[in-house]
Length: 190
Image (cartoon, rainbow, N blue to C red; front, side):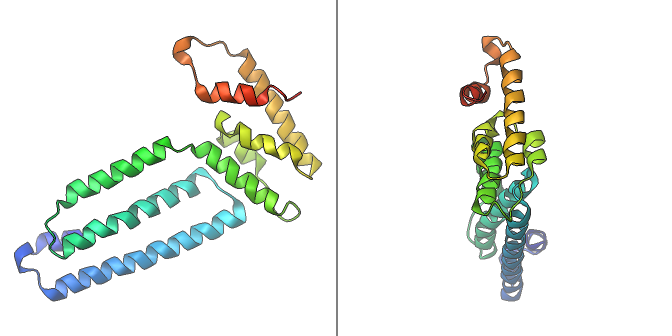
């Protein structure tokens, strides 16, 4: 909204009132971002991590970083806002692609479960159906759970994954480092 308003106004004739209202709009945006972050944190603590919740954190962080160049642009600093925006979004996208999201989701959910096994539940169905071989190392930790049902279900899942990974024959062009690591993690499971 700020960028549209300032684009309509002649940049050289922007009044202090318009700049002030634009800065105020950015500050309100920061308050909304912090509120959204706090609420997402409450969801995550109550229900655990999911892809969607992790992506919301990523989007909130990206928006928060984008506030700085927009604020400088409002204050008539000579920056190319389009280049900065594209640059920041690209860097955040690359960071997201190099982060191991499946392992992060599994690690955070398993850590949350082990913090208080009597009260916290773990959504094994989500972990089994929405994470892949990257999460196997973290799920293996659940074999030590106090709840025998959890440990039994995880063991059955890991044995099923072990069977599936052993049956796959791949060419060297189809080499998957995550699957190789998962095979190593599952060697001791009987």
